[in-house]
Image 1: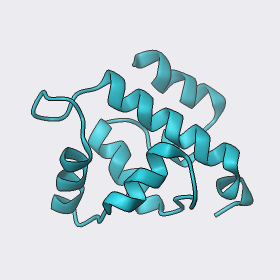
Image 2: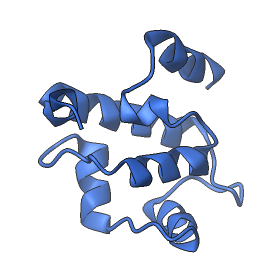
Image 3: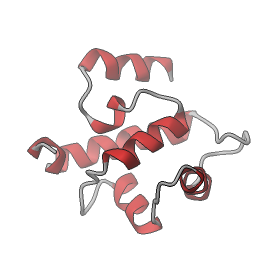
Image 4: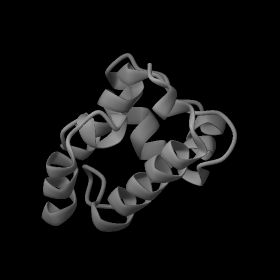
Length: 101
């Protein structure tokens, strides 16, 4: 993973993107997205998301999340391109996701 994914800016940007997704989209059952809805869906796809890691991710504090499998799984949950969360996409790809929201 690149140093870019270690920076506080990356962590804050990931938190912003997750917040936007949770605010705009609903869970698969039509309810608001929660940690439980995401973690249950991920667990069904053999991906683990602990509550403490989730808190780091949505707050943008502490540890960077570098687990591309986890980020790709969250992207699948929200039915978006994984590059939106990994930060490896072009600005155009990121803009495309955000404009669709």
